[in-house]
Amino acid sequence: MTAVYLSTAYLAPVQYYCKLFSFDTVMMEANENYLKQTYRNRCLVASANGIQSLSIPVENPQTDKCLIRDIRISAHGNWRHLHWHALVSAYGMSPFFEYYRDDFAPFYEKKYQFLFDLNEQLRLTVCELLDIQPNINLTVDYQTAISNDFRYMIRPKHAGMDNSFEPQPYYQVFQKKYGFQPNLSIIDLLFNMGPESVSVLQRSVK
Image (tube, rainbow, N blue to C red):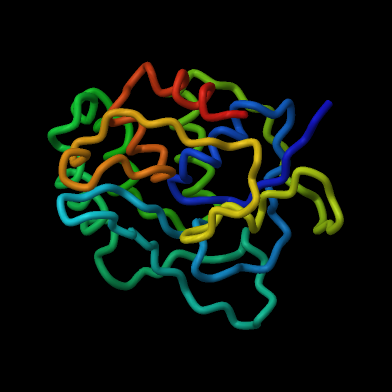
């Protein structure tokens, strides 16, 4: 049985979901130290002004070595309102936004305490909408020198040497203005392609 190692991620990119789709087993890293400037607490969406980064504010850890599962979402600010408003603005005219909006809206109303828990619940929802059933296992300790390690390769502004992923074009709302923008958040694919999203994932796996 082939396993892939992934970090937790907030509305992860298409590349990430290609791993969930194509590997027998997914080892979700629960014992790494929190890493800034990654998809662990941010996603990229296609807005009318280009690619927009949406980041979840987190509380500063008490130590430099704080496990990802212990990272708390900051109670300050109104990021939930801002993120939902950004999603409505970016995808309100997409073919399937109205179809899926009620699946995502509750995540911007309920206050989750831990980032890891929010990410996992979002992942479960997305997998259900995609109709994929990845075999997910949380890690029990932190390991190095492992095969199929994508915990740090899948990150913003870093394509990495992932020879198993080749993003396939699909319809996007602002494609005429910016051209096709690859490897955005999975919600970009869902809101634009709906039930055909799995076909895009399948074709993007080399």
